[in-house]
Length: 66
Image (cartoon, rainbow, N blue to C red; front, side, top):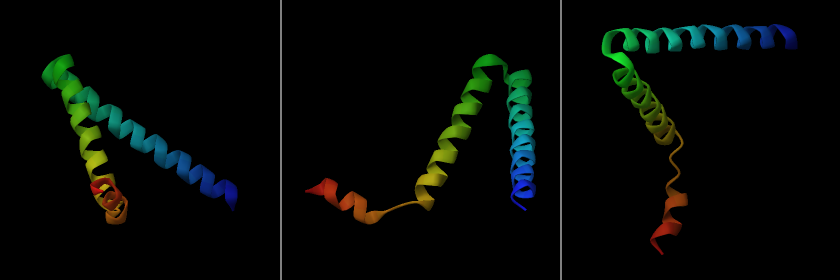
């Protein structure tokens, strides 16, 4: 059972990688090197923002105000 789950995770990561590289390649073709870097950084910033919103811990920020 473990190996089936491991194969499923590996396949999902592979499909996600193909989609990610396809998006970056299309941005490179459409906007050039600078535009694709900007697009990639915007993807990273958006992902970080979503992660931060989902793991927001208000009690951790209370210590900073003291």
